Length: 456
Picture 1: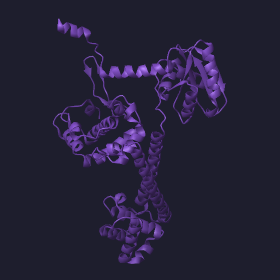
Picture 2: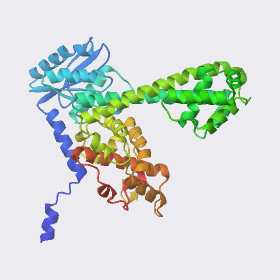
Picture 3: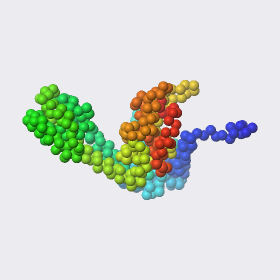
Picture 4: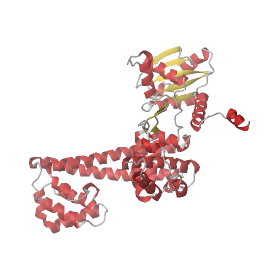
């Protein structure tokens, strides 16, 4: 009898169901049935505005020829039509493209109007499902935005916060500077491979060697790429010039083996010699670009760490062994405040590192990573793995277990993906609970098979 009552009283609602229900409840507060829906397709100087009910019936439509900052009169016009149609208020919806949606959200907030966003991907799919064509017009898109909002296929944008907003901008700036640095490195490598390949063989990892870069700067910047001029210095004077370059860059003493190898490479005739003059001139400029990017990167990363301290998170995130303050700041710059995520798994989904299950009846397919989510967050989590594997015994132990176990052994790349997801989950726990990272808790469940291991 007790068992029967237990079964009858069980709702069978999973944790995922509860999280989804809570999210729908929040959206229903922003999109109540008593509100009309104002769908806006934003552009530079042409804004299409429609007022719809919850059955997607268009109550009013108008094109406003204005900038986003002048949409206040469009919202007032929409609110008037909503009131005349018998609605208590209006909910504003748009796609989060460019910067204009931020402006629209601020204008809606000043008027006490709810504001939600619709993913452009959903609008694109709905456009194709509308009439099986690929037509794209501002009029149609505005209606589709309103329809998706009525179906609660929208989301509440992250609340505006000055400090978190600054961290996001710093994160974007850091990615831009890193891209400039990598671009300079790749161009230098390509040019040397064509015109002076011997220079790349003078060090095991030339672009990670301070001595190699200092020696290359002496040849390309100080001597203008004239190998004969550098050769006339002699080995001893070349070594002295490299030492001066090392000191100027604020580094330690050079590795003499690399210096000698670089001097010996001056006599190597391999490469397209006729292109050396122009290529070496470009390399000199690229070294300057590289140095500039490194200097900018130091400034940006220092400000990111200072912002973490302002948020009182620097000590917490650094309690995770192997995760630097800069690495944590790069992750948080992509996620924003982690407290807005219902669970740690939601952060992993946001990064696109969650498994995509394939189950149907008795069929069980191989789970794979969904690939959706925020690419920048994936990159930030992936970069954090390298330091964690070298300095965090828990992550190193897990990596060894995943790559050496007899059953369902993972490749190194798959295991690194698992560690990246673990970093995101544990960072969410540390930030939301304001509790320092505990190795014992992090190690719990190390021997269990996780669904994400099959997805990596």
